[in-house]
Each structure stands twice: as C-alpha cells, then as structure tokens.
Image 1 (cartoon, rainbow, N blue to C red):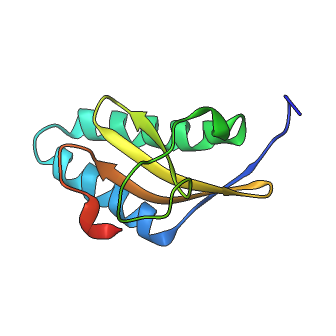
Image 2: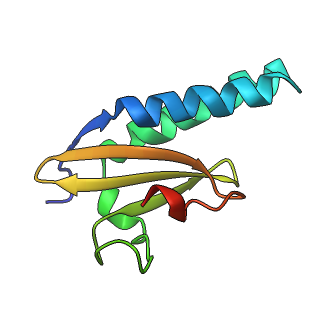
Length: 103
C-alpha cells in the first residue's frame, strides 16, 4: 500500500538522547542546536510514510532485521523498528560514537 501512513512513537529514551545531543551542541552554537532539534523532529515525523525504505541496522549483537536506521544531519542516526502500523523510534545516536554498547 503506497500511501500507508504509520504512527510514529518516540521513546522516552530517544527523546532524552535528542535533548542531550542538542544541549551539547548548544554549548558551541545555540542556533545550530535549534536547527538540529528541528531537523531531527521533522525527520522522525517523516517516518510516517515509507519507513521501510531505510536500511537495516546490521550488527552482530542484535537480531537480524530488527532495527532500521535513518541518517539525519550527516551524523545522527534514528534507530527504529516497525511493528504493524507503528514506527518506534528507540534511539537517537551520534554516529561518530561507538553505539554498540546500547544493543
């Protein structure tokens, strides 16, 4: 169904991670922090349509085909899973960091 609309649910953990990234960036540039926050929120909301078009997160520590990833602003990853008609954004990661610890 090409026009299927999903409900996007951002976990408390992902929301907290986003706040931490924005706070960190705000120390250097409040304007860049505002822009990043706005962009990540918009990209998460955009997962309402065609979330399956983004690649799988391939990692030996997690089951195959559990999470998908979406790159935002060149260095942040939205890590999410699709269940029925819902998209669950579980993590917002700075991909310059080692993120295997969370899996």
